[in-house]
Every structure is written in C-alpha cells, then in structure tokens.
Length: 342
Ligand code: PHE
Image 1 (cartoon, helix red, strand yellow):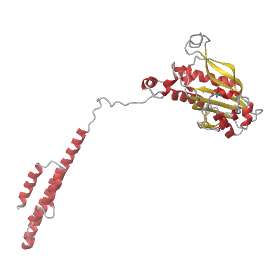
Image 2 (cartoon, protein in one colour; image 1 turned 180 degrees about the vertical axis):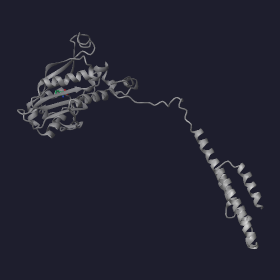
Image 3 (cartoon, helix red, strand yellow; image 1 turned 135 degrees about the vertical axis):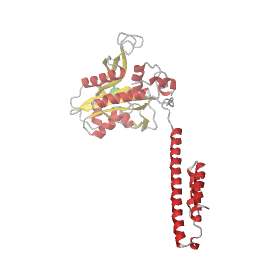
C-alpha cells in the first residue's frame, strides 16, 4: 500500500472511533510489528542502498505522523470520558435530602446522664457493681443479718440461699468500702435493681436506683442535704426545695426520707401531693457505724452519708408520667416525646 494513502486511511478510520478500546484495537493494525506501516517497507533487501534510505526516511515520517494522530485521538477520547463522568455524577445540591431516622435518648438514660453530669461535677466518681449479688453484700454487711425484720422491706428474688438479684444498689457501697480500705470515698452508682413486686402503675419488678456514698473526715448531715438539694434542682427545676423527715434504714443512722416541693403545685397543696406541698423522693442517712466497721472503716476517724435515688420515680415526677410501665413497654409513641429532653 502506498504510504501516503495510509495516513488518509488512518484519519478516516479515527473519525468513526468512539472508545479507547476501539482505538486500542485499531492502533496495532497500523503501528504494530505486522502493521500496515511495517509491511509497507516491503522487502528492503531487494532495494539499493540509496532506495532503502529514501524509503526508510519516508516510513519514519509516516510512522511519526500516525503516532501523532493516535495520541491526539486518545487524548480527545479521555477528555470526553471525563466530561461524561462529570455530567453523570453531578450532584444537585437543591434536591431534598434522604430522611434520616434518628433515635431518641430514653428518659431514664437521660436522668442517669444528668445525675452523672451533676455529681461528677461535684467530684464524685461513678462506680458499678453486679446485678447478681450475694446475700452478704446486699444485706449482711449492710447491717441486715439473716432473720432481721427489715429484710421484709425488700421482697427479693433469690437464686439460692447465697445469691440473689440485688434489691438495691447499696451493695455497691459495701464493695467500694472493702476496696478503698479505710480511705475517703465519694461515689454514685446508677444501676438496675429487682424486687418481687407485682407490676402496676407505680411498681416494676425491675427498676433502677442511683446510690450515693460519701465518706471522709467531718462529713455531716448538712453535706447530705446540700448534695440532695443540688440533685432536686438539677433534675426537677431550680425552684425546688427539699426537706428531710426522720425514717429508718438498717444501714444508716440517723435515717431520713427526703421530700421535694411538689412538682405540680410548687408547695401550695394539690391532689398530687395530697395537700401537703411535698412529695417523697428518696431515702438517705448517715452511714451506720456497724456498716462502717464491717467494711473496714473506723467510725471514730471517718464518717459520711449515703442516699438511694429511685431513677424511675424522679423521672416520672420530672415529666409528669403516671405509669412506670411506660418506661419498659418500648412504645415509640411514648419514647418519641422525649426528643427534646435535656
Ligand atoms: N437502699 C435504700 C432502698 O432501696 C435506699 C437508701 C440508700 C437509703 C442509701 C439510705 C441510704 O430503699
């Protein structure tokens, strides 16, 4: 084939090529070892030196012209490919977004987070203990020997005579004291608790408490009152007041029942607070000397207070929830109301 014709043929073929793949198939037909250009050199051996030289130069020219044509085409195809990709992947920022379903924080979790936030800010540490406890830690070391009538205050799920589902978070007090071996303590312990109660609007066989324990030198009832007043204000509102009433717990002496000014009427008296202006929220007291001694503390050296907040109870008061079972029924209509909870 005439060398001149080759170039015009390449030009023609390139016109109809649209993909890199097609281009890659075409290229060796002209520029490959057995391509048309190489073949055009024919049988060099039959030519004179002079003729070989002229033909060689001509072939080289055609070759470089052909290479140029292919590379220009390749570049154009690559450009077009990028352009079409860009056009296809264009994002319309004005399109409405995909709806994203975000969960809500459970109101009980929110209360625990608020309590941790408050007490950690006051220098407390957050402690934990197991839900499967021993009778020794849940009762004996809390000044409740076997057969003590006060055991009836908490109807307990026993696994066997030694092991039980903890009926209160107070065993974490015992565990912490035994670990700290006479040193000062400042902890809260939120967690699950269990009692053999029939479930109704105000009782649940599984519920939650937040224990508090502070031991040190010269800790008094005034410190206890301060710690609980802060809690009432943080969870139930800045305008809240508290009052302490004498009560009984085997592990504290003196013991108190703590009331908060009524969340509904503010203290004037209404049906919710039975016209007293106060609502009972938790139990507390100064740690009983017997407990201190049994857990390795010298009551002459170190003393302090403990409290046990019912998480469901204060959460119900905070939001005006009238049935404790709502917390555990997983009804989204209930849970979604706490979207804005803080
Ligand atoms: N553990 C007690 C209860 O469950 C509450 C409490 C804790 C009382 C700490 C005094 C001190 O009823």
